Amino acid sequence: MALAELYCDASATTPPLPAVLEAMQAVYREAWANPSSLHGHGLAAAEMLERSRQRIGNALGAAADQLIVTSGATESVHLALLGTAARTSPARLVIGALEHPAVFAAADALRSQGWDVQIWPVGPDGHLRMDLLDAILEPPTRLVSLNWGQSEVGTLQPMLEIGDACRRRGIVCHTDATQLLSQARLDWNALPLDLLSGSAHKFQGPRGVGLLLFRHGVLQQPLFGGGGQQQGWRSGTEATALTAGMAEALDALPLHRPITGREAPAGVTPDLRPSRDRLLEQLLDREGVQLTGAGVDHRLPHHISLVVKDVSGGPISGRELVRQLARHGVAASSGSACSSGRSQDSPVLTAMDLPVSLRRSGLRLSLGPWLSADELESIPERFDAARAACT
Ligand SMILES: Cc1ncc(COP(=O)(O)O)c(C=O)c1O
Image (tube, rainbow, N blue to C red):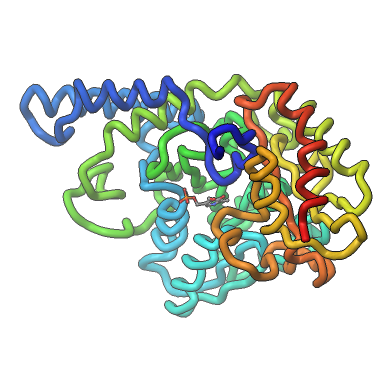
């Protein structure tokens, strides 16, 4: 029965917190009106919306007028890239080799407008090739968009160093922090970045709402027009309940060490990291199990990614292993949620140049505070049983 599964798929999405559901229900009960209306119902909704925006800004070290509430990171990424590139002559956009498909899609749209899109290659552990930094940021590079924490292999990128390098060259730098946000309190005003995208459902908020933080003067144009809400940056009647749910989820994040200034972003969640490290160690002790992505100090602190061979050393199907794990009570994923429905070589493992025979053998376990120590202890045994059942 699916509900008895140990949920180890936090990178796909996370269970909404009870406090988030309560906050949203309260809005639907008491502040359900259109926040643009001038009557009492509307004013109550506007007040609630403003309070939620302030809470989100406070949680991230940003002013409320540096925040655009969107439908999720897919929209945020498109607004960041297309909104920055609008009304300027085409130049060069740099994106990482391991970006989410939303970034590739937005880059394709810019390519069709005449932009030169350059892919920044990664090394075997998924880190951007920093030896290429100077060459890659040379003119006519005007816009850079990079994943801070990679969803399939967990690798963290040195976004502070890259942001600084962009700043020195007058290049606009966007980071897709969708995976990182569940693990780190960011201090937006101390970051050398111009745009930052996220999605509430990755940090136990509701699905269908996300955020874009932006520096004034960077965005040139919204994605679409309409009623001019959110200072014209995102038309459409505001999702007051979803915004309140996102604010609640951000406030409820356990107080992680904030990322400020030049601090390296590795290991920011002291509470999940020891359990993750222990589980990873137990799994890596098994023959035919290999880590993908960066080592423990340079990967998302709740994230494990592996390639797994079968008991006789042959390649295993990651999808089959995930199905067997579900039968043994573990909800996991074979890669990113977006690609795990299809049987194909993982584009991420391909870009990292893993052997062809292993590119369909990925397994991802991404943990959350809902898992107890005893539950985590039971995973290696369940893993063995699931692997043995793979044909
Ligand atoms: C790194 C990253 N960027 C963007 C997204 C897209 O988020 P959403 O589906 O909420 O729009 C995801 C979702 O998996 C992600 O992991």
